[in-house]
Length: 367
Image (tube, rainbow, N blue to C red; front, side, top):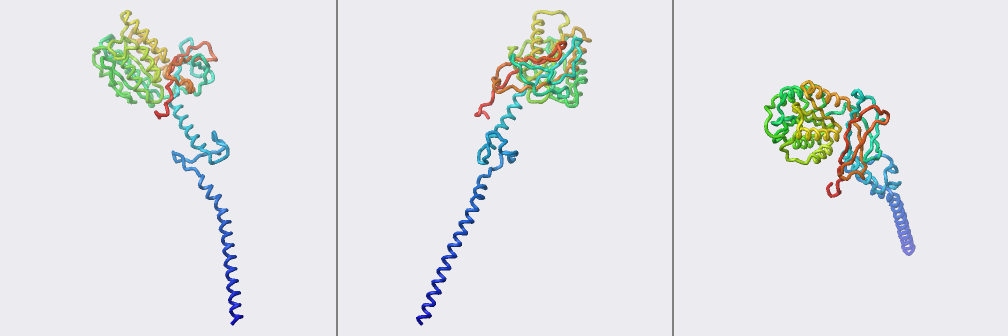
């Protein structure tokens, strides 16, 4: 009995020691497994969520601004914010510069390259970023004078305007028509339907009432502002202003420049000799067109009237469109003077806009 009890005691002791050893081995194994799993868990915890647009970051991390090699830096978010702001800056800060280049004989020069142009802004040379040709679409608003001050050669003026649409309109272009009268209004919204434009002109009745020319100019330039392409105003009027709510002509020019519109004027109704009102109107129209890169035509006969429309159509067909992106320091809401020349030739005349208004950057609160 004593031996049996001693044997049982030895057996029990051996079992306890074996159990203890297995427990130690098991604990050690858990420690090893946990040590191996921690880096994986830690790495998965540092993964960034997708960007706001649902697209993951692309390209090596070291290529992103402000990011060395550590994936835990918030450079992806910073880079995305910079890119978004740059897109806003570019889309809202582009200054398009339609340009007509004419030789001494009056012929359009059409084979110039971007590097042949030189731009100065406030007297300082600035880079031009792009050049396109007349394939750029046109958004045009014709301002047709239906006031009592314009009555001479009325039927021919309407026919000349109708022929103008046929000559200048392409499939990608659109035009609108404003009626200049006491209460100037949009008679035909933008359309590519030439028949509809012709019908609008043809149905205008006998001119009567006041001439709210300035109001029509401001309304038309604001109307074209949201649209892409070249924005063009063609004014068919004697230029005499009588009843507008806008009375400050300089402010009207500022509005047109801010809306990036180019203005052409066919100044009709001045056949019988000039008076003081007509001379003042002529000076205003010359200032408006020269500031915006357009031209004013003073036809004295019905034949010259038709030629004036032909010249505008030809000018639009042969233009260059240059692009300039002002720096942030120039976004001050002020007028900046533009001076564009052709470096490679001194026998040409360049007609382009003379200034632009740079919008102020949006504040963070306004975004």
